[in-house]
Structure formats: C-alpha cells, structure tokens
Length: 296
Length: 220
Image (cartoon, rainbow over all chains, first blue to last red; front, side, top):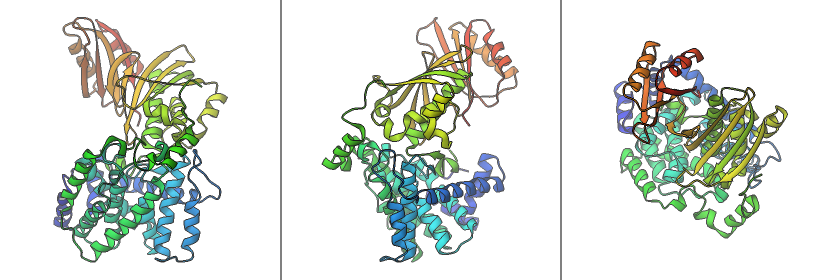
C-alpha cells in the first residue's frame, strides 16, 4: 500500500490501532515481498551504520577531503559533558548530528536519510533519544520506520533533493521525519506525529541550498545540528498537544511550491547565498584553484 | 520506491549525486564491458567537472569501474587500487551541450580485447540514467536487467525479439523503441525481470535483422 498523504497514513494507523512505525513495517514487508523480520533486520543494520558513523566522526584530527570542515563533532561532544545551557541530552544530540555530517565529508560510510547532505539529523535525534532515555534498540529501529514513512510521502508529494527544492527539501524533510520519529518513540499518537512533521517543515520553509564551493560541508554540517533542534522543538510542541493550524499535507504542498519558486542560484548550484559571500568565494578558490579544468 | 530509498542508501559520502551516483555509473560500465577492465578514459562534464575533487567523484567512478558498490570503503583508495591492479586510467574534463549537469563519459577496454563506452547522468539521491551506450542513444537506470537490441528497422523485428524473450520464460517490465531514421538502424531497450545467460543473448543476436544485443545486468 502506498500512502497518498500524511492524512491517509495517520488515518490508516488510527483505524488499525497501530503506530505509524508498525503500519509501515507491515506495509513495506508486503511491498518488498519479504517477511517483517527481514525488513526489520535490514533497518537494524542501517541503525548500526549510523552508530558507527557517530563514533567514526569523533576521531581527533579528522578533516574533510577539502579540509574546510572537521573537529566540531568532537568539540560538541566534549562540551556536552559540561551540560551547557540545555543539558546533556540536547548537546549530545547536536554532537551526534555534527559528527555524522562531518564523517560524511571525509568520505565516511553513512546512511543517506533521506540524503547524504542531511545524514546527521536522524542519528542526532533517534539515537540520542534511545541513549538518553535508555530505550531498547527496537525503539530506535521503529523510529526509523516512522521517519521513513514520512519521507516516502514527502518524496511523493514534494521533493527530497536540494537541487530541486533547496535545503528545506533535505534538512527540512529530515527534521520532519525525525520529529515524527521522536513523537512515536516518546509514546505519542499518530496525530501528534503528523503535527510534529508539519511544525518541523514550517520552521524550515524557504531554507535555501547554498553550499560553499558546491561541497556538502558549509553550511550543511551545521544545518544538520539546526535540523535536530527543530525536530526536538516540533516534537515537544506536538507532545504538549499543540497542533499545526495549517494541515500537514498543505504544509508539504507549500514546501513544493516554495521550492519551485526558488531561483537556480539557491538550489545546490553553489552560486548564491553563503556560497556567493566573499569568504565563500575565497574558499572555493582555495579548494579548487581558479579552475580545475583540463586533462590530468 | 520503498523505505530503504528513504532511510538509505548506505553509502560512502559526501554526496549521493556526486559520489554514490558516480560509483553506480562506473559500475554500469563494468557490467557493460563484461570483462576485466585494463584501461579507462573518463570524461567529467558540468558539475562533475567543477567539483569532482571535493566530492571524490573521480574515485567513485573508478571504484564503480572496478565493480565496487556505493558503500564500499575502498572507494577512497580507488586510484591506488586501480594502479596496483593494472587498470590504466585517465580523467579529463569536457563540456557537452544539453547534457545533464552531473554527466560522466566512460570508455573502457577489457583484458580479452572487449571495448565499450557509455554516457551516464547522476540525477539525484544516487539514482542514475544511462543516456548512451557505444554511441547509441538510450535511456535506462540499470535497476533491472536491461537488453539493448540494435536492429534494422524492418517489419516484424520487434515482434520476433519479444516473442523469443517470452519463449525463454521471461517477463518484460519495460520496453522502449527508438528509431532516428525510418528504415535504417533502430534500437530496442528491454528491461526484463529475470536474468539471462550468454547463450540466450547469443540466440537473440542470431535472429534475422538483429545487428547486436548487449545485456547490462542490474546493479542491485
């Protein structure tokens, strides 16, 4: 079964008295023609790749191929030990996200979720939630099913690609997926998960994709941390019973329309926004020289 | 599309289009060659040409040519592995009018004398489209086993090929036919659900008015 909308997904889960995660596991097993156990195991492996990426991203002295990012995941992790302003949980979550996004930039092995550019947001939310709340591994795996269900609908009705929809489509979608996952991991209802999804997207609507030198590094690494903050904010509001005034599927449609109206310079071409600042332009020259054209 | 396209693919970073997609284009070239590659010439167009160093696009293409998957940790060392395994390679940057911004052109030579070329585009999220094979315009994504049948544009040729495929017990999932000029050479692109062995490919090749048949195995 393919879900046409988040409303369709939510109502089916409600009618069958299942969580979005349970419904998704069942439906995906049917679609891929595998048992639920096989599909679950495949997702478990992906959780393990995410956990490995967090650890591998916190290796002292590690830098990206271009040399422009690295070292902030471990810095954030050390800071988390001091409790910071918001306590250990929040800073631990940010550290996970930054570490995975930095590891991606070193040609590390990651799970694109939904994209490589936004690969830190689910590890930053779902895995931090599991560790901080001492939840069983199964809760995190099921959280990834919740997230995946939301992502499938967004892919169908809008876009997950920065080149098409800007960063709202990548980090925005990842935060929406993560927000719904956090709600279900916390025991919230499908209705709350749908509202969390809406509120996460609303807070990133219009976010442009403007990578410096065209690389998945600046500002992508830090936007993964920002996506985590928005996911938690949206999940907390939804769990408090706050609802989105604009229904979630209309929010997703709005994201698509905003993406369509973004100029090309702000859709992953590295020509606008932060990429076009004097420092952004200078970094491009430093990394690639004036031009890397020609035969080698 | 299923949930593992969203929570996935598992891949070597940093970019699904510039790294994972590039590895997949390289791997289609490997499958097309159907031989041990000993020489590769790789052209990078558009965004691939601009940013390949920062994204490891060159390493990913080369890794794919050596049959590595998108999540193979050896992608980072692909240049060294190619050198130590006797694969001679050359990269060049070029421009192609109207090509997708993430396009690679690969020309491969194999140990037993086989040769092939393709043009592929990385269209987002690690997904690819092959746009030309051995100089012929095509359109397929290598998610399924794909037969490329070059034939003369003669009445009944398409029917006899599809009948033969059906007689082998195979189901056609997708079919496209292109014919630049009426009555000259034409091309069928046939995606099949099953796998096909070389004897079966050979029997298609021997049909009247069929010039050549190439099987590109699915990437999986």
